[in-house]
Length: 487
Image (cartoon, rainbow, N blue to C red; front, side):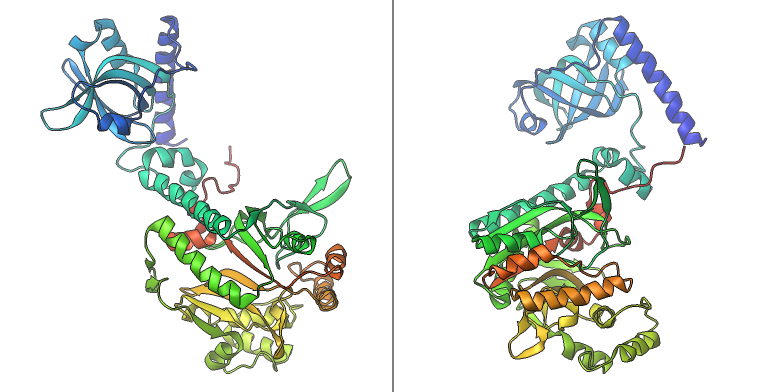
């Protein structure tokens, strides 16, 4: 056991004794009610002599003779409170000095005043324990240095680090702004199944769980209801979107997690050209609402200006220019040979679509953006409509910023015969060992045979938010999944 753990346990014993002392005085240290009248931010803007009852966690406590100074903090602000022995009953003052600790949550009644040093304060005339803290807060000078502890005990990070609170407030603004934009554009928010018998809408390994009542295995969704929202297009809805959690049983990295929030929308009677125009408009709206700017300084890339013209980059031409490879005419053996030369790993059973995607990833980091990557080969776009003037390519786009793919959209494939053929190719990939290939969804094919109108769709995840915060996505999740601590 470390010295730090011993100190914490010693401190806990001392605080437990204080709790017992309060109980013996018939003082409830965990009451259900408070007489709070004002948030601290309101108290800070009060006039001399104004009376109020405020609450907050004690963040600092200092005794000077017959005076005790504390700092309390609620969600709105932090403020000084002055306990003066002459201003409280002697026993009440003594009780506070002896039994209240940093970390306790208290209620304070008093009057606003400004100290000689100019600090806005509350002169306390009464106090009440609302929640006795049995464990100390982290050292205020060092805070939470250990990343694992910060994630595992996020509540301590939020107590000690106001920047963390602000980050998650911005994250809430981010999703609210997306919702606001889409609702203003006439989109209907919908909910689609999280548990599925067949996964769809992405190339990813799913989580599997068991449904006891139906006695069958089911999957946690890997997309935000793509194939379900397309069924809604068949059913007559023309603009739908969903924001929710999705799950992919894959590796972890700076940009990837197993469970995360995603948004997808679908828009009937429009194509990917219309979609790119709206996506650019939406991203600028969301950036202004969330961060108040369109300019960002990102590591390794410098300033990124979302307000500039978004250029277009041709998928096949970019690879040909950078690597002198034509992925459309190259065989699987040709692609594997080039990947071997570049030291890029791939599965032995990887088919052409997977190999092309790995080739693209070799050059992706060379593009600053913002730009739209367009004209993807059919092999890497199982759900996108083919281009009429080149059936080897699709009407698909991705947002590229600072070398990363931050959003994906396309003209949705609504030809049931073409979709069936592509699903069958994906099925062969799965049978060959590619666990990320699309599953065959017969029910979706049947829905398409009832005719889905021309439709375009787009998806974006919380990775976009983390990217413009210039942080790993794990830092931007309140409670990321952690292995249990070892006893």
